[in-house]
Each structure stands twice: as structure tokens, then as C-alpha cells.
Length: 408
Ligand code: 3PG
Image (cartoon, rainbow, N blue to C red; front, side, top):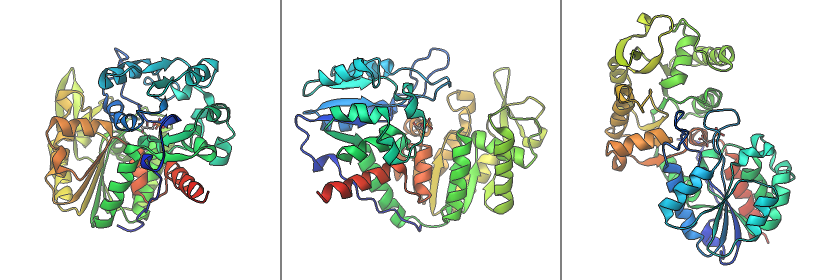
């Protein structure tokens, strides 16, 4: 692959961490069950532990977001504190505040070896906007809280593509380094990119459509996608652009995203593959059919066997495969077939393989396929963008912080 990223960042091993008050930005953005409102997958919380273990002699203040304002996964972090406490067997202090007096006092009262989790950072309005780093440094969040910290540790790789204050602001005014997740991700991805071979096959599902469309274009332009095999909601958007799905999908900004998909197909006619057959939910039962047989109001829940066979052949011929996002409603046993079958095809291919996103990571574990994959990451959109060769805002912030620190 071309456009290889060589990333030079500082790590926790470059600092004396004892007695320091550390701001640790993690990504504990977890799936939330829409009915119970409980966390339904704890992988990202589990992942935070390695860095926390390296900070045993510090006063640690953890910040994370959960969901987006207004969506069903937008909640406080109290549940995350309980899960983390149980997993670590150590007390996790929690404050229902982000940048106010309660949060500031809780930070000031921390002792060495203690961990405090702040509430959902997106409760602070500023954290919902993208800033240039120098402006992020001037936000109320960064100007208030940075006075209380000695070091900023960035470990939220799944949100490395966001230039939010907690991600790009603190490193402007404080020494900053990567946590263990970010350190491992950039090291492994750099190594993989060096040996990755064509043809590059991207298997793309997922629901954050505008992000996905932007990334697809960059992947193709940068020579990192010879075939893009579409699944999930993004697959439906492309099938609508091909006029193979007749009824509207009922998603946000539908006309705009369908038009973008349409122009991508026009620009790169040989790159995209879309499903031939699918499965719908008929009163709880799985019913398979060709896409052209779909009735008005039928909702796609999974891929059908012909599509799996077609995609599996392209995967078998790949030099590098990157798969991100489930192929259907993987959580429902009836509709997990496509996701499981494609993961099997990826695991059994001779290609260099990268699997991205929380759902697929869970599915791989369930199927005992973890050892057959070259790189597994709970990151979704951030990893897709990383593979385009674009420098992500968090990585850029860490590289700049390393240069600044070394020149002192
Ligand atoms: C993710 O799950 O992709 C990250 O946590 C980023 O979340 P966002 O797309 O809401 O910024």
C-alpha cells in the first residue's frame, strides 16, 4: 500500500508518572440496549484497563463521550464507572459533572492511585463541535481543566478522527502522550501497511453514512480500495442509488447521501459490489429473497447466501482485506448469518486481514477466530479513515506534542 503513515508519538514510558495528575481521554462509547438502557457490550471499557494499570502511581481523571446528543445511546457515564470498578476490582470515583465546580473539586481531592471518571464529556456543549487545535485550547473545557493536570494521555483511538476539545485541545497546553491502545494501534497498523498487498478488498457496513461516504472516496483515491463490498445500511444507500431499492430508507439526509453514492458509482463503476439477495424479517422469521423481489416496506436484516458466496470469492482473491461494521442485525441470531459467514471468509483467506468495530470484534471472539486475524480494533470510522492515509486529528496532536516536548 502507498501513503504509509510513519507515526512518531510519545508513550507512557517517556514520562515519570508518579504523583502526577493525569487527564486520560478514552473512548468508552459502548452499545446501549434500547429497551433496558444498559450497556450491552463492554469491550471498550475492558480495553481502558491496560493504560490505567500503567498509571497506578498517578491521580487519574478519565474523560469519555457516550453516544451523540439526541440519540438513543446518549447517556451519563455512571454505568461505565460501575462496570470499570467491577472489572478492575478497584474503586472508581464518579462525578456527575464535566467541567463545573463539582468536577474541579473532585479532581483537586484525588490522591495517588485514585481514579475519577467524569460524566459524558458531550454534556459540555463545546465537546460536540470540531475545532482547530489552537481554538480547542481556548475552549472553557480546556482552559478550566488543564490548570488541574500535569499530563494528557490520549487513548481514544475510536474517536481519533474527531477534533473535539478533549482530543486536540489539552495537548496544546500540556505535555501529551499516547496511551497503550493508541500506541499499539499505530505500531501494528504501520507494520501491516508496510507488507499489505493488492488487491485491496474493503468490506464495509455500518450506519454512520456521511463518514463512510467520505472515507470510501479517499480509500479509492489513495489506492487502498480495489473492491468495496457493501453491506448493512451503507449497502442499502448504494442499492437505492442504483434504483434497486424502490422505497425510501427513512434515514437522515437521505437525498443527499443517495446522491453522493450515485456519483461515486458513476466515478468508479468497477469498484462497488452491492447485495444480490437479502433476508427480511417477516413476523420474527427470516425470509430470503432477491433484492428485486423486495416489497414496499420490507426492511433488510441480513445478506442472503448468494451475496455471501459472491463476496467470499472476492475476499479469497484479496491481498489485503479490511472489514468494518456488521453485515446485518448481528445481535439477532436469525440475522447473524451474513456477518458470521463474511468473518469466516476473511479469517480463512491468505490476505493480510484487519477487522474493525465493536460488533465484529465480539463476533470474532464468539466464533473463536481471533487468532486468524492480523489486526483487530474496536475502532470503526476512525480506523477506516486512518487506512485512507489521512492524518487523524488525534495522531497529529500527539506528533506535534512529541516535537514540542523534545525541543524543550
Ligand atoms: C465511534 O464509536 O465511532 C466513536 O466513539 C466516535 O463516535 P462519534 O461518531 O459519535 O464521534
